[in-house]
Length: 116
Image (cartoon, rainbow, N blue to C red; front, side, top):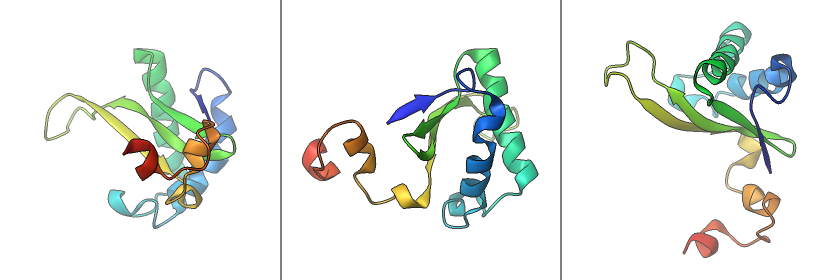
């Protein structure tokens, strides 16, 4: 498993894979459903802008593309005020597997065994 920020590769590198993930109704269910290609690109560009402004953002998780994880500032109009959010989104094929643990070299133990 590797993590890559927008400074590591051109912004366009992950656009197609992020678009597919953001178009998946089940993956996007907690955010109100799939988003358009344009909305996905805006979200991706927002991550890059946050990185350039703050030095951190959501980063891609990949061996093959698995999703993203990281820290982002809240939107200015967020009801809880200004704060930072830890967030992640994984492609559906990574759900319910120990793929992330195996990619880190922690054998194929289940997360419950690894985490207790």
